[in-house]
Image (cartoon, rainbow, N blue to C red; front, side, top):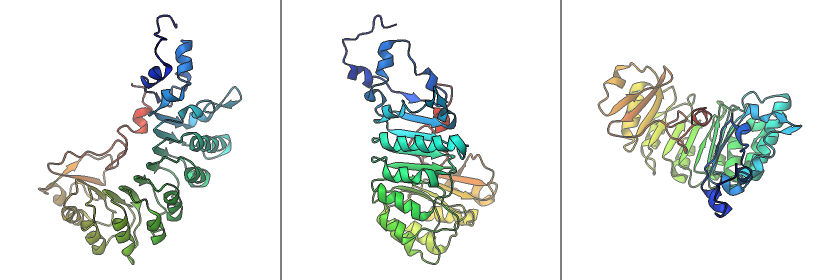
Length: 327
């Protein structure tokens, strides 16, 4: 009911008092009984600074049109977008996911964070929209999507020179090149999961010289060498978190961690029960979801793994937490 609402307040005041988080299972609930609030959620300011989420089941049509069509134009002022397009790989769902993502890129001009997951056709169906839209992007995360080529990563970097963080799974047979480094954002402070070329460590050296990286995560399958370890230890911007490939054993990983004097957390692969891990006086073992994953934290540090399971993230809540029915 509208009775008793202080309509004397400006609409802008009401809009700024609201903070919406659009949950994947609650689109039907965005139908207030009050005509006043129903009109209020149509105001762009009601979504200013909001975090919005979309999942595959919301790509279905309702009354002959996609359910997201009337909603996305209202999100022009949202700050973060989580999109989970699991199983949207063929037929109507593929077409709808492509259309949805295109609309997001056109309308969400103020979005600073774009976090896409489980889209196996992201590179084919979504790359053009990332490069052509989202002009305010600062953080990009592509989790569980198809492998990204380093060349296409360079395209994203060139389109968004103000990026601060970028995380994706790269094609395992490709390696980071000078072409990618030459367009890497000057302010990039978090980057993963990259493959490095052992035959030419000058590429990694150039990246560390160009970008003030604090969080560097190497791909699990990439190669490693003493020359790479030396570069990491002498990085112009001391690293705070580091992820090493599985070719580095527990003892060698600890040596790398100790050489990076500002390092708070290290991720590596191996035996969590190895004596070198449990006997380390300067690092402590943190709980892990995977048996072979070792996460170490420097003793005395208050650093914690991020909401997305990585060593750092630009958000406090993961998409799973945002989609939880518990408020």
